Length: 571
Ligand code: NAD
Image 1 (cartoon, helix red, strand yellow):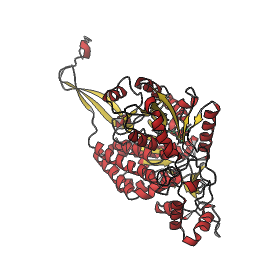
Image 2 (cartoon, rainbow, N blue to C red):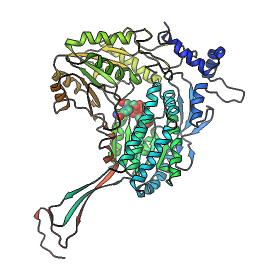
Image 3 (cartoon, rainbow, N blue to C red):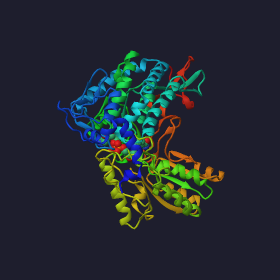
Image 4 (cartoon, rainbow, N blue to C red):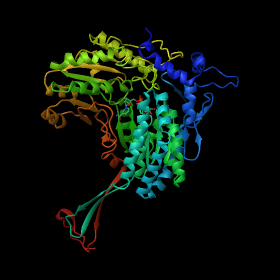
């Protein structure tokens, strides 16, 4: 059976007919998405892709190399070629020229120079710049959201949601620019006072992951700016177009306000660019979002030069559904967090822990939805830009292979796949040739000692096991190396208290009757243990973007020493 027959062929057909004249729809879309060369020798993009790219002032000729380095005055790039590929169609969206090591160093220098002007600007004025960045983003919220869907593969509303998250954190940072404060503390010495002062660090290096190509930058850029720093961004090599579009959109705001645009420099590139940033003594703070493996390397390299690091690494998040939970609510929470973004959020639910008394009922309701082929009650897999789709493609073929090897490992070690469908979806039919990275979302019951329980597989695979007491469930929740997000579904106030307290979840995000993913910007976001202990966005996260100084000020005519120390000498 063709997967698209199951996943609403008509919706996709309707959409493709919107993009192409009815009679030509199928043939033209096939030709364009296959990248046929026109007479000029240019490689043409699909109508849909070119519409999105041109709305954001990005080139649509995929033979043209797009410069991926912005040093504040010019766009350049003579390093590695980064190919941006649509995960849904395999279509090449653009070829971006990343930075060399020398170009990265030059951009760091430009950003460092810009930081001297940013730090002199009053904080509320910096907040005003962030407010204008918000306006720039708002003017292209739909276009940018669509580009995120096109390039990363997440569904349309989630692509837009990322831009909205950037806008939200702009609002937060603008407010913060008038409210961040140090401390005034009492001194034990007469006519003395102690201050704790926050001052800017200089340049903040932002290294981001493919799965949030816009929002993670937003969390960092906005807070770094209002705290008085310049930034330099190295996005994931597979999502360079989203970063170029964002940089182009916000660049005029700096110029308009008399600040060098190198305050938000960009260097697309691969590992050499990342390592140059991480190793640079001119970048006192590295904010890194990515895998535990790379994060460990980055953390050590930054520590080696006594820099500061914020690490936002992998998650392995559990939902506990207790015996007294509202099962309908829990079902909704689990579904979005397990299959949303095709399981490619750091906060995606990977482990489902069910109280033995409700397990059979909950699983039967859950599997009914996973297995459904009914048009109104199914987890629609398909084109992420089709508004009805709930599950887009995986980001690349490597992710599909990892999904397959994880499932093969589970079954070879005696585990069971519970869903009727599983595995790679071959030969989709969007009216175009299928080169997308499609997989079925899966619920599995691995053996209890299977190594998969301790690892993050970035795909829509949900592992299930039962428990008898809340204590046991919390122990399972806490038994993995990662500590990002966790949720308990319960109506028992004592269970809530336990879950939130010292004997509860050891994660950075500890939810009740809400799924593990979909955090707001107001609280500090981040995880504990091998997730890296970092915090970004709201809460007290801003305090990491400054250098703190304790200042004792004596306004007396004597110089008494603290703790009653007597040095016995007069000046
Ligand atoms: P990744 O670790 O492969 O890459 C992240 C970034 O590091 C990229 O920009 C990459 O080019 C760069 N990089 C790679 N090697 C480097 C090196 N040696 N030195 C410096 N930089 C280097 O991660 P990914 O596959 O892009 O993203 C998926 C991972 O990110 C998942 O594990 C996910 O859980 C995690 N993530 C975490 C959060 C969070 O907030 N905790 C948010 C989003 C994603």
